[in-house]
Length: 467
Image (cartoon, rainbow, N blue to C red; front, side):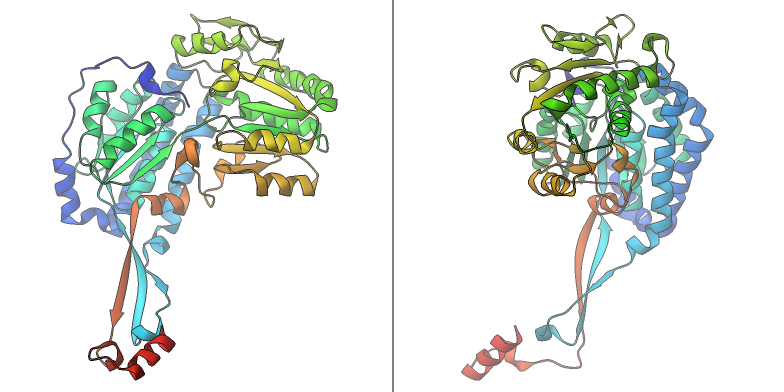
């Protein structure tokens, strides 16, 4: 996704907190207990339920999100995540028994998950509540203290989180830091035990550099150009319905939204006709007055997106109002590969379509580019489905739908290559904020002499057989 820092003021005059108190809290060991973790998760759920209307209002102020979309993608999504963590936390915390080699008998081996310490979570503006709370849920479940930094580009959501978090969660362990570029820079200079960042590649490199100074682990949830391959052997009516849903949700400001469509030439006319009809069906012929259609985050990003359209073959949409941060759902056909719209992640309500001669050429096109955060393919052809899954490397692959894979907390979510590193959601999130500590326990009942000096040929022979 585009970096927020491109828009940041130098300072928003928020005093930057110290992490010393959080370090002291963690050192007491109270956040490691099952009781503390469960209490904090339950409190976070109460926050989401009791303040859902306030959260929806803030999201509407920042992004003009409808109440339904706010619930589906942010509030309800986060509640489901909390429930999943509460349900499975006890089993995640149990040491995992593993085998012990014969040479270490009698003994037992296990893996114990332990919290990393104090985590820094930097959220993004496109889902300004969900993208700070879901990593926080994972951090709490793993037993960490945390500082969350909401995006200042979504000021209503940031201010609300800063107000509500202290009312519900343990203030000695969980803090909110508001602010812009200067405040973020100060935070990055602090010795956190874990850095978790959602945003663009440029700032991702800055976060990784900052973490390297403290030799601390990093998770980067970035983005990129997620392709959507449409095979002629598919249910086209359902295909376009799901593409429109995934692309124009949050007016395209979703890190896994289909960035562009690839389709064989002979199916283009039928596909575009159905796609345009479906756009009108979901968002009406006048989307500017449709309450289900949101707005671009700010005028600067709106201007960036409008600039992408210059000289392109627009077959639907294109209307815009920068003052209102509005851009109509827009479809363009056959942009040049050196056009800005094909060089940068769009992150907005514009969908380019490119045509190809064959299925294999579409796969080759994707493989020749940086690994995306998500890749979509619509097909009823099992052989082609297997080709996509086996030949394309992406953070996630979804067959015959878009975005919906995110609701499955059994699946890890994260990028690969320039689309990110590390993952979270469900058990993967718990593991991301944990250290997997190796533990071996041995008995005094038997102590084989063959591993001790002085050595002999017989001991060596036995060691080779046992190892």
